[in-house]
Structures are given as structure tokens and as C-alpha cells.
Length: 211
Ligand code: GRF
Image (cartoon, rainbow, N blue to C red):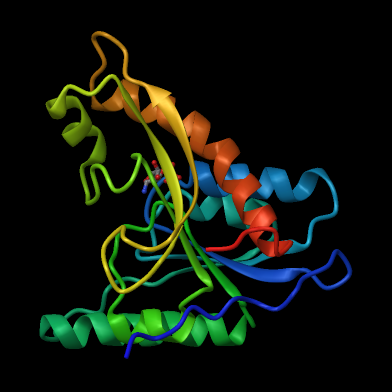
């Protein structure tokens, strides 16, 4: 039987939900969330930033906001399944010590094992830079350009055991322009992500979204 989605507790400004943000790269999405959270009292706050390496540029955004930031590289010297599980155990232990309640994947480039997802199902959110179910996977911009579409976009969804398959919470379209390459398209989509993701996280934490 499939594990059900279990949603977080009802949050309030007095008792905000504790978010862990997971990144792999430059963390422009993390920066937009931190800016959104600093604008006015919210019913969520970021309590820890985790990356899958020690040199992910985005860790700086967490540090400069005074948030605990931890880079956890993939352990070497183990067979691949054990390595994945050992890495997830280290992540889980940081999540536990920070008392995180919701995981926000923001450019986190690793796929969690089903056993990790089961522990958090209903409380892990991801943003993917395409209009899912179109162009899932690691190269959505390249795939959109090869397909010749004139519109792409971004999708916020809950994470399930599949890859970019969980229930969709929000989507926004972005035009593909004549002469676009992967970089120009990615930049245009990111600008929209930086508005859509904080807004969707906010609605979710306020209990305003259902699946
Ligand atoms: C974003 O486009 C996100 O949707 C994708 O990776 C990118 C991360 O960018 N999964 P950044 O690290 O937040 O700048």
C-alpha cells in the first residue's frame, strides 16, 4: 500500500513552521525565500540550510542570514546504495537536531530513496523548471528547446517516490523566445520561480492548499 501524504501541523505567526531548505548550487531560490521571510512576519521560517557538498555557493545566503548551514558531501568508499543511504542518514540527523518540520528542495539535485520520502511524505516540496508533467528530469530547459515549444514554465509540487511526479501545488508559464539558449531560458524561468515558490510555500504553510 502507498504511504499517505501527511501534512504539517497548522502554523501561525506565533508558531511558524520550521523549514529546512536543501540546495546543491548557487541558491538564488533560497535567497528569494529568505527575502520573502524577512519582509514581514510569516507562519514559516528557515531553520537550517543543507547542501550536498561543502562548496555549494548558496550556503553563503544561509550564513549571511545567520541560519545554521551544513554542507554534507556524499560519503566515499561505499557501494552506491549504501552511500545514498548513509548520506540520507546524515541529512536526517541534521533535520532532527534542527527540529525541521517541512523540507523545501530548492535546486537540490539528488533523488531521495523511497524510504526517505516515506518519512516526510506530504512535507517535502520541490520546484521544477518546466510545466510538469512536461520535461521532468535533469535537463528540462534543454528538452524544452529541443521540443520547440513556445511556452514553458515552472511547477511547485509535493515530492513522492517518483522523479518530478508528486501532486502539483502551483504552476506558472514562461515564454520561450526566439534565439533562447539554455542559459537565457533558465534565467527567465528562475525570475518567475523566485516569486512562485515563496508564495506557494506561504499558502501551503497557512493550510490554504490541498491536493
Ligand atoms: C532552479 O531553476 C530550480 O528550479 C532547479 O535548479 C535551479 C536552482 O537554482 N531545480 P538556484 O541554485 O536556486 O540558483
